[in-house]
Image 1 (cartoon, helix red, strand yellow):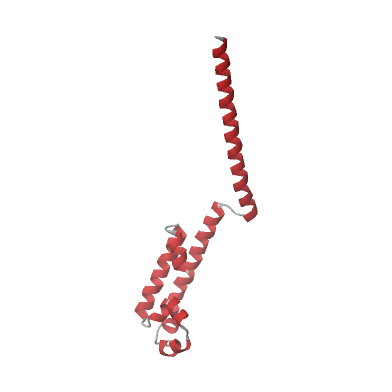
Image 2: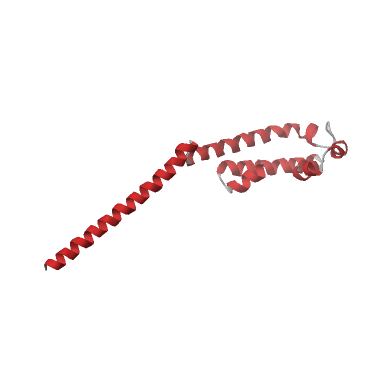
Length: 135
């Protein structure tokens, strides 16, 4: 009976020691994450608010640009593509989707797609894709 009690006591002490070690490992992980939060000065909630605000501001800017599609984005505006394209390099033509189309309806479609990506950025739907596409 005495050996059984010693065994049970040893098992109980081992379990208590394991719990203590696990909690100290968890505290180390918390301190590590807390160190990053302290160093960078932000947390997940602040990043989410930044993403929502950035998406909203981008959407607002794009909606305000609808007024200036005809004078600044179409071939009938201030700088038609037949004058612009000889002065630009290949990288600009490849990156700027608006340079590929000169009609007003095509510019409306492109701006609507940009508004869609800004909205998805604000609501947090496929944020990586939305942020890359919004760039």
